[in-house]
Length: 253
Picture 1: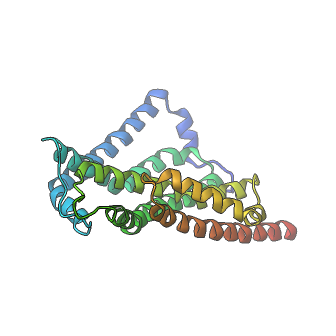
Picture 2: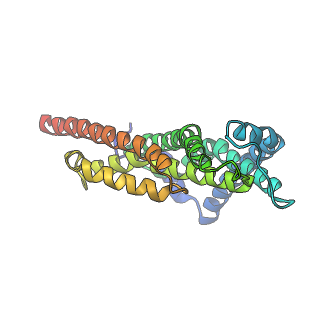
Picture 3: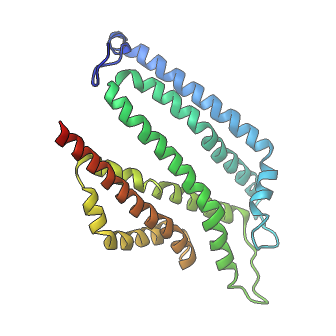
């Protein structure tokens, strides 16, 4: 019979495993993860031209250029690697979780797994929101500053790197609810403190958005900061509800 806080049955066996056996198991996890990632990356590279055309079809630019013989190849390679990582990451995370889970207590496992799942989902949501909402608005805003004799001639590498950096930044800043929840759960910052200081939080969010966006235009900064403000308020209210339920359970005991 297991109780909260009791080690998992495999824990005793894991303690008996030698250091080399642990390394062998870790090597198996790394090898399988790398093979799955490379398989996805290779598959994406076969269709990278079509994917790249789909990415730039709605951009208000007549055509993109590449300024060196290897530039287009490198962009398609980076695109394939990024998509390969994002597609294989759930499997990689699962293998890592299976490797570390036997060494965790049952209570630790119950707390960590939902947090990791929400973190991964928020990262993907942030990347998708940036690609479909923020990046098009940023490009549309910037190319309008051309004139009749000043037309955009953009390198595909410059465009791809800008969008990739922006999507990565958005995926990372979408981890804000996880950070707030962990701070509230640990007792370092209460939910009421988050709600009481919402004005300062909004100022900090706009500063972070200004730093995270690769271009200085206000459109992309507002598009990044607005969902973060909503996430902040929603996370603070959620943390408040959770803390009140915890207080009621403590009083009932």
